Amino acid sequence: MSKSRLVATACVMLAASTAATNAYAMRCGTHLIARGDHVSKLLRYCGEPDFAQSRSAMRSFHNRFGQVLFTGFHEEVQIDEWTYNLGPHKLMRVITMENGIVREVRHLGYGYHDR
Image (tube, rainbow, N blue to C red; front, side, top):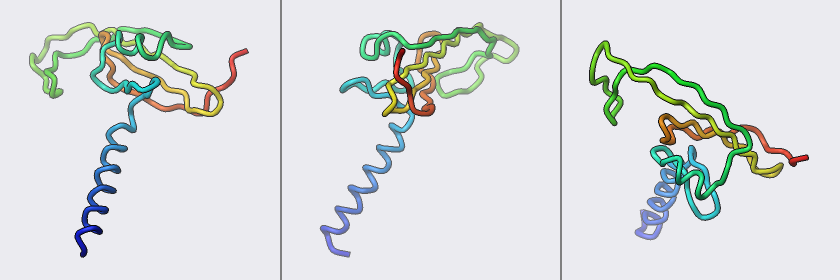
C-alpha cells in the first residue's frame, strides 16, 4: 500500500471515530454540548428549551467510572429532560441531565415550525 493511500485511510478512520464520538452531542452555533457538560453551558450556548420536565430518582452512590461505591446507600438524583425544537429541517434533541450534568443527548424526529 502506498504511503499516500495509508495516510488517506488513517484520516478516514480518524474522521469516522470522531463522528461516532460526537453522534450523541448537540451543536449550538460553534459550541458542542456533550456528556459531562454543566447545565450552565447548555443554557449559555443553546438557550432555554422548548419543553422541559423534571423528576427525581433514588440511585446508589457511583464513582465517575460507574462503579458502586457504597452498597445499601442511596442518593436522590434530580433528572431533567429538555427538548429543543431546531425547526423542520433539523432533528429535535432531548438532553437528559442528572443533578445539572448532561448525561445523554438523544435525537428525535424532525422539528416543526412554531405557531
